[in-house]
Length: 609
Image (cartoon, rainbow, N blue to C red; front, side):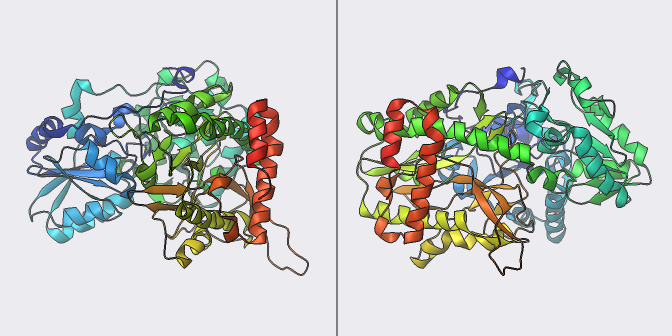
């Protein structure tokens, strides 16, 4: 499948059938051959991807659960699926209760289960699917419980899957032109190599698909909704590099684009290539790579040095060309989204479409944009009680018809050659209640607080998270997800290392980093509210007499916020002024790109509060 043919994969709303007894039985048969009492099945694949190619959807194959985060442990007499709160409904709907018990997923879930296994048990794992840090936690738990944790290869699940397993993706890898990338690959490699050399590190083994895409200025189509190529690379301290990809993925002109300092070989050449660094240090990111690669470095006679992927921070801090590109992409996407919001505010108020029809309508409008490549994730379209599930994914079984008197939450995004978007709008179907308006406005106040804050250099997202929650906290409410995640430029819609959340994050927010601003409120069984824009970090003007370098956020997302849900009496004059400025800017930027009918509506809904 070429990169072009992978574009705009149709929004998938089919219900994944529960795998139940059949696939679990097949796995247990392979486990028995290996003398295993249990086997760990992470969601992540060999590349630690969040979103996976079909061939790597091992957790979905064995359990039926298709969420983007989770894990399972299959014992000979029982099976446990771990899924976090985003997937409470989906995980139970997609699994066979006669086979799987479903439990909450957190950082210690797998280790805690290993620690409770009967003494003497042998639990298998695939080292290619677990990070070194994750494996260390499991080994510690196993040791304390008298349990043996055994690395097995080949993976017994892959053996059980057999010929029915889809083929690995072979999307062509294509250049990302300099007009979008901003900095040549040779310059990126030289900069990173200088740091390696200064620290007496011979090379870095890079396995994260997003790092490969950024470092070599290439894009692919191996991962759904993300233009990522699967492979590995060795960046050497002299600035040269070895790129390991399937030969079938090499597009016309790609080798010339990569240049003479980049050697291209197949994936099987990685381990032999590591032997060139015997007796030397090789950097590996223990959070982004698998335990398999750490062991491969050791086996080659090199010394693994666990540290951040050298691409991590440079990739996160967008250059001026990337920021200009994503700014333009967000404006174009804002026009498409505004056309959709006009439909929701007019025709949809009478036809009352289902959740699937809403998602499909937005997809069709976005698809009309000539330069759009794909969605950036499957649209979240949740009405009423489904809106209270932050990462709800509609399917044919759960599809609700909208009705007047409740809220519709739509979280969506798109991939453009020059940017990646992610935006959430909550709209009222019919007339909202006073409670809807009150809670929406509390969320909006937090959104504005985070959008307008100035903060000193060195501040992390952890320090800012409470700003978005303060108005909910004051009334005794909160939400259980992070407030902001990093976003790439024609890369992943979830990109680290920066984030805004209660959980400790050690990475300061730096100029050029893109983060989402998405506080929310969720009333279980009734409705959900989330307001999400993307914004990037830039330097702030320092008032006269100020002493510290300060940062602020520059907004990227432009689309009207449902004024019918705003209780203006709860806003301060400064907050009202912000909303008026934001909506005036929406009219200014989007009006040239939308129809006369949509423009007239936009001017009405963006009038001063």
